[in-house]
Every structure is written in structure tokens, then in C-alpha cells.
Length: 171
Ligand SMILES: CC(C)(COP(=O)(O)OP(=O)(O)OC[C@H]1O[C@@H](n2cnc3c(N)ncnc32)[C@H](O)[C@@H]1OP(=O)(O)O)[C@@H](O)C(=O)NCCC(=O)NCCS
Image 1 (tube, rainbow, N blue to C red):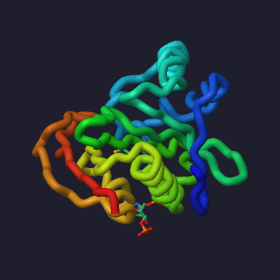
Image 2 (image 1 turned 30 degrees about the vertical axis):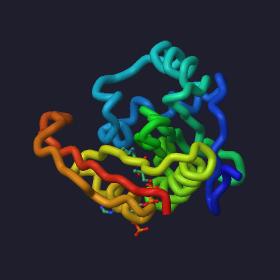
Image 3 (image 1 turned 180 degrees about the vertical axis):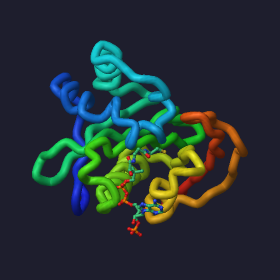
């Protein structure tokens, strides 16, 4: 069910902490992530993992792995709003050997299926930095459309970046 052509989503486990530590301080990956503007410790990540392992009504986070079981990163739905039936998508392919090979697109398609078919959401939206052209291309491939752009909204590594708002509706 939670499986695509290249990836599957599974629940996070405490043992994923070692997987996290392979990318959380890799700037190639984290330059595009809001929560990682400074280096983070293992203890910080352990604390985050401890809460992310438990789904709540508003947040559901998953590990992404290849069909062969290799950990690739995480994705999730946040700010889940059951009245207005929308949620914000977040994703990271932390294993840089797997970037730009379709794994992110595949995992998002699985997550969208979960959002629409299992959580009965009507819309999923996301925010992405304007310089994250790979991310934007990936989201477009998944059906997301740009609906807004906040200019010079984020100050990252000494430069201002726009924040782009994208959304996709249940098909
Ligand atoms: C964003 C992310 C999830 C996308 O996953 P991915 O597996 O790398 O992306 P995909 O291979 O599925 O799709 C990327 C597309 O962008 C293209 N692309 C790659 N680099 C690009 C670039 N610099 N500019 C424009 N397009 C680019 C790829 O060719 C591919 O398009 P195609 O299939 O038409 O050729 C992943 O790159 C990632 O986690 N990056 C680091 C963290 C991050 O940016 N998270 C998202 C924050 S909003």
C-alpha cells in the first residue's frame, strides 16, 4: 500500500538515529531545510525522533527507503487540518548518492496517495526555497502548482531566498 515503483514509506524507528546522523550536518542536503540553519547534535536529533516516531492528529512522519530496504530520508505531512482537509508536505532525501534519480518523486507520489486515500485530505501544500530548482521540478512532476512567492523571505548562508508556495489537489 505505502509502496511506489522505487520507494516505500515506513514508520520511523529509534534505530533510524544512525541514518539521520549521516545527513543532518551535510550542507548539500540541509541548505534547503528550514530546521537546519545551524549544526545539530545527536541528542537534538534523538529528541526530535522520539516525538516524530509517534504520529499525532496533526503530524505524521515516515522513513523513505528503497524497495531493497535502504534508508533514503524522511517525509511527512504536517499541520494536518481535518476540518479544512489539507496538510503541509515536507521531504528530504538525505542519502546524497540517491539525489536526482526519481526517488523523491516516487516517495511523494506514495505520500500523496496516503494523504488523499487514507487521510481523506483534499489538498496538500508545501513551501520551498526559490533556489531549490531540483525540489520545484520534483514537485511539479508530482502535480504541484506554484500559487505564490514571498520575495526575499529566508536568509540562508548569507543570501536572501524567495519562498515559493505550491499546492496539489486530490485528483
Ligand atoms: C527535493 C528532493 C526531495 C527531490 O528528490 P529527488 O529524488 O532528488 O528528485 P527527483 O529525481 O525525483 O526529481 C528531480 C528533478 O529535478 C531535476 N533536477 C535535478 N537538479 C536540478 C537543478 N539543479 N535544476 C533543475 N532541475 C533539476 C531532475 O533532473 C529531475 O527532473 P527530471 O526527472 O525531469 O529529469 C531531494 O532532492 C532532496 O531531498 N533534496 C535535499 C533537501 C530538500 O531540498 N528538501 C526539500 C525542501 S522543500
